[in-house]
Length: 101
Image (cartoon, rainbow, N blue to C red; front, side, top):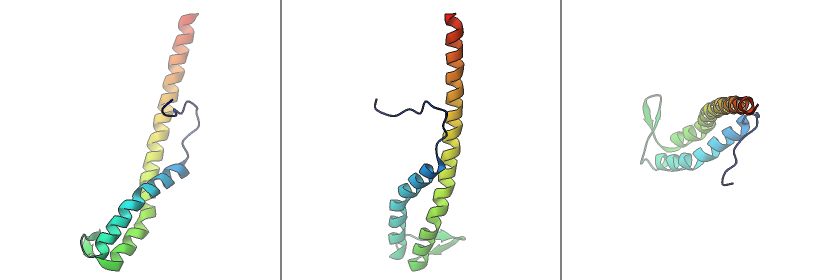
């Protein structure tokens, strides 16, 4: 099997979603911090262009917040999709068991 399908009723853990989003955002945050540190690209903070060390600190502090938002949204969508998938499978299984009788 190329990929692992989740065929059980267990929900996806939020912890995995949070850490996946955090580690996915780290390279982009590092790039943005370097560009802001060398006054190449600003960081928008409260509608003000920010450069230098202040922008780098802002990026580092917002990384967990960004991961929390996107990890939470991903977690909700995946668990809702998993719930719908499991209910659909139950319906199909029920329909097949009724037609065999």
